Length: 281
Image 1: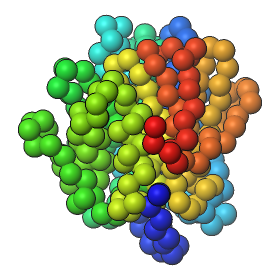
Image 2: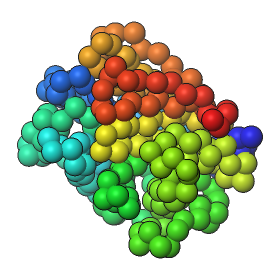
Image 3: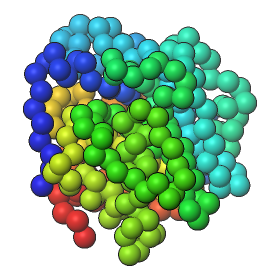
Image 4: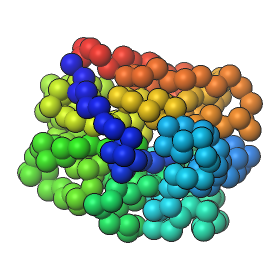
């Protein structure tokens, strides 16, 4: 059973909310695609693109100016990350970071709007990145708020530390879950168990999770569908999943089904699978 916590409008606007985008391209990420999405993420951060539940029909009222970050898989299969505490519109994408992303097939980008009780600082910017026991890496970005992060238990023997961020605690909780399942390579099972946890109270659990050889993208929200509903574009050589439709990139944009997961193995677009989180199997 999914957690259900209904909030009033004032409570919703005080929650941690963000904008996100993930790109997987069959060869390398094209400069045109990256430039278009970068420009769109700036406008998303400034709340200049979409009418939704938080801006009450007035664009520019719900600004995401508390930092940004990105993570990508480099040519050797390692995950690299760049974070900044500045509003995304005050930064240029550093040329060296842009060059590295353009050598990659996979990247996730996150623009932060901080909860009132959390610091505005680079080390609170997503994606968070950790090492697994196997020395494999994992990076995670989140849109939504977990109201009771204290229940996100994690194994202290993993020698991992978390800040006060609900998202970083969620990442450690997820790492603990995937180390406990019988088939440790099944990253879907551990993720579904978190989403299905009836004790976990959240407004949204939209996640972008990057491993060295796979990506998981989730859409889980309980209200404000215009703001929290993820969109995606899929072609033979490109997959984009984002908080908002990026109309400048041609193709058939679709609404990602609520309570669903997109799973891509080996960063190969031929392996895309769609899962429903209402059942654990």
